[in-house]
Length: 131
Image (cartoon, rainbow, N blue to C red; front, top):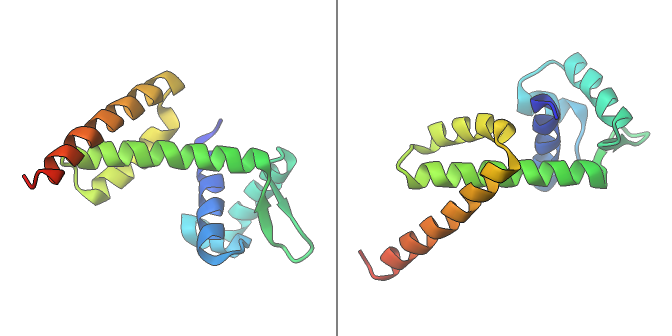
């Protein structure tokens, strides 16, 4: 899957969570791209079955689009939290996670999730002891 497809679906999901409705102009603002660029990508996403658009131009994720958006966000969150746990500043961790979320294989992602779980257990135990 293309990086731009995942980025658009993730952005649509986030906008929906924040404002309750999604329009092309909000996507353009969030991704810092032109409205015609969004219009072209929206047409493609509709054709591929990731989103729908009603007569009021409101955009909704389909089940297929929702699954991709959630998976992309999960990869981003796991990678970002691991990087921050390793001492990477928040801004750099977010930027790096946004790139890495598209390139990582499922096998490697599963390994990182296991590592994140162990890291959390160790960090949480240390923090609970007040150290």
